[in-house]
Amino acid sequence: MQKKYSEPDRTNSNNYMLDTSAYNHIMESTEKMDATKKSITYGVCYYSTALQDNELSGKGAKTYNSDCESVSNFVVPPEFKQKVDIVDKELNVQLVPEIASCMRDHARVDGTNRFVATDSLSGQIYEKIVRKKASNKRPFEYYYDAMIAEAAINYGCILVSDDEELRDEVNALCPKRAITTDELLEIINTYE
Image 1 (tube, rainbow, N blue to C red):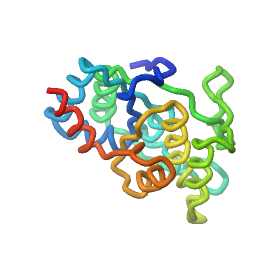
Image 2: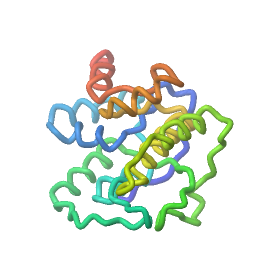
Image 3: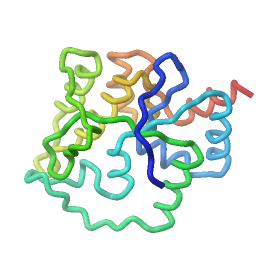
Image 4: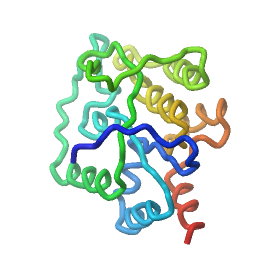
């Protein structure tokens, strides 16, 4: 499925940015997929960046070495890719532009990259997460997390992530702006 770029309606309090871990959680069961699918009828909107697509295709930031080359030989099974496509289609997941990166093969000149405003709240979140100590083997380990969190805050979305450390980093600067997938499902259940 080819996702489309869209700027979220910032007046909608039901805009959610799905982290890669949220995709994985939603794909675990038909019940979770059905609940999130039904949430669209309540005005819930789902977003991601192209980075989640990279991660879900086996080319996440953790796969890059110090020369900024992906060293992963992992091949995503077609069944998994099909499940990701179903989530994207059924939830009408829209893309938002992420900040530009100096990582190899990550720059696009199609207008879908933007520059981070380091003095903004989203810029502060990016800086805080990206500065975490990464290993020499995987120096870009936290870049995608930082860029996804920055995009969520920049566009007024609530980040849905099952990465506790990432949620804690976001919530430290922006309380209640990052939740787990189970918390999202609890919110959805209140609409019924």
